[in-house]
Image (tube, rainbow, N blue to C red):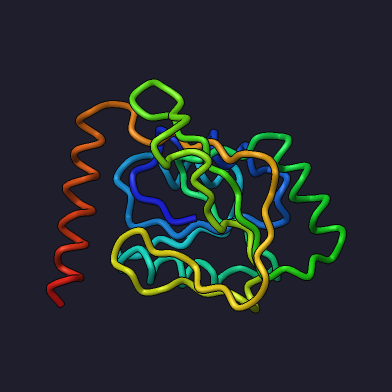
Length: 183
């Protein structure tokens, strides 16, 4: 996971992934309690200057020791049913290179069940030998070499709690996308 000023999210996210063998966090010099809260769940925290989404995620991936990786954002939660499904899949020695999961988005106080946001499948569980992050400035994704399976259970995504947060993030992301297009 990569973080910056996620004190309001980090404990619930990490608690939902407490069952994982290893938790790795790359923090972009948070000015809130993100790192202190994360230390309750893992010692593998790397505080570094911001290097961009894709580079930070790739660095985080390089710090992991396990073959299979579950990528999470701090505003996401692994439901117990999803955790059980992932553990079951891992016991079976999957032939797939990655698995997608449906993200159920909580946006401005409501669950979004339409408009392409749900099921909004994203590849989040992957074999590090067969996947890497692309270099997109924003909404970076995985480049996967091999078959992709689907998990049945949802990942919860507590995205924008208010309109101010939404437009702040929207402005940041569109600026990054414009800079990338210009370059």
